[in-house]
Length: 283
Ligand code: C5P
Image (cartoon, rainbow, N blue to C red):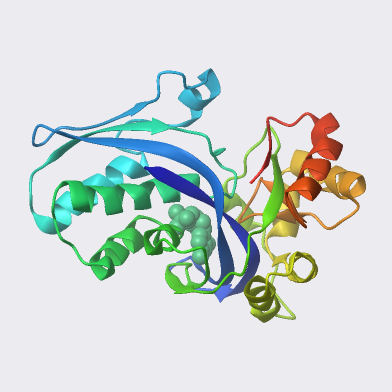
């Protein structure tokens, strides 16, 4: 199964809630970048997760395979909600950078919910998968919905799919250092001049990369730059080399530029190569 990454093309923080989370309006876009997940049925009560044999030492250090991984938490939540006993052996081939604002772990959890619901023949409706997803994290519902793009509200878990015309290309780079999402939210100053997602939604609907590049916005960017100086420098360098705006996805630390088409993306990637970042790709 492919388990996709997301980019936030718009993210506004509408306020802080009593439960400690922030009320958001964000436009999520599904990228072609993906992990691969393989599921096989196993003996009842036996849930296991392994990394693909060729996983790099860095992946082995940063991706847990114990019960703290969102894949196993999602699998367990499915069993808890149905009261059934099943088993699964799951293999994760990780390609999406972690702590990157690309939703890799959230996408993995959603893929586990959707796939195990079928493999175990639980027949849970999509609404129940959404309910479980929201208990596990804020970004998982977008991937459960399985759409190309959506406006997400609330903590991020209220998903309204939106139309996308044509395809969009992005050059994304992640510096060595990842960002902790809570740390970024903690740095957030009080928000004034609230921005709205309408222009980004329109750019996707009419298929205009130029309008998208003008309208894209992420309120968390200054906070992300404050917690990660390496990323701040990367954003400045990408902007200088590409001569266009650079955006942060989610709470970072992935930064991206919006491209006209594949040849343009290749040109932007070539310009950024000298920055020698651990992740640099057209996504
Ligand atoms: O829900 P998720 O696990 O993605 O959230 C990680 C952390 O990010 C939360 O514990 C919270 O500190 C912060 N967050 C937030 N408001 C949101 C989403 C996340 O403050 N809407």
